[in-house]
Length: 415
Image (tube, rainbow, N blue to C red; front, side, top):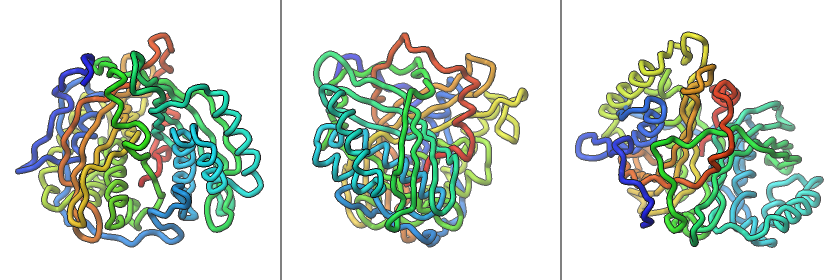
């Protein structure tokens, strides 16, 4: 372990529930810590989860040449296609291997634009210099600018980490704003255009210390996989049943992390309880709801939020959790464990710059069990934060600007 790795902070402690540890509490505990500046706990519902059939037009887990495919012909499906596009095109293999890059573009792009996309990608890869051993992209927000069943335009706010896992320089954090145009072609969403530029800059939480380069070795190419989202949801609006596979377990853990980072987790008790029932194991539901309600009240009281999730001056709460990478730990048909590397943003988008949304990084091992026709979270073991380097001279975006990415409609697609 590197000498600069910080000691475990109480803000990322294990949240004990009965004989185990409830997995999702670590995610909302981290977000709540960013929001409140203090230690906190969280919670879950007592009703038995209902398994619902996926919406028509999409099947979770399909891929061609290692690239996700098979999206539903919905807004959520379009969001998922755009998110996977930026994740795949920012990966180490895509940047370093021309054959991988060309195959991926042919799968993801429309027939009309594939040749131009390949040329542009080769030009960008060739001018980027040394290929990063660590190349991860997390989607913090996704907003549909336009949609019909033939085409869609999706605007993404992403955080990227690029660099080496050896030497004196840690991988570098950056934020990007990406707009992806999509068309429905050959029975799926295909990329027809894309453009990108600098994104909103959320400063790193001051309680987290940058890790040394060697600490990132577990998230180099070949050691971890990128998160994959499908946009497939059930009739209740939450992710539908997952496949009884290792990939299905990874997807369930990814979605849980994203859902626990949604602002509705803190401001809408009905949504929170329904979400918990859809994701957590029945054995931990009661205790998780108790803890979750406690954390939500802490955030609401600390930030002075009303029932609409805004402060008295109309400034909205902004929270998001992105998954940067997933490492398989163990798998059987009955139980699975995966490690997630996450980035959580929390704060208030308003005139008070001291409440500006900030970003924090955490590793966690999520344990799941198979039950009720899907994977359910049961426990988490938080790991030490894994914090990339960042430019101390790059100015943070004004707090009020984060309202652009904080709304319910800006939530990224789930896995």
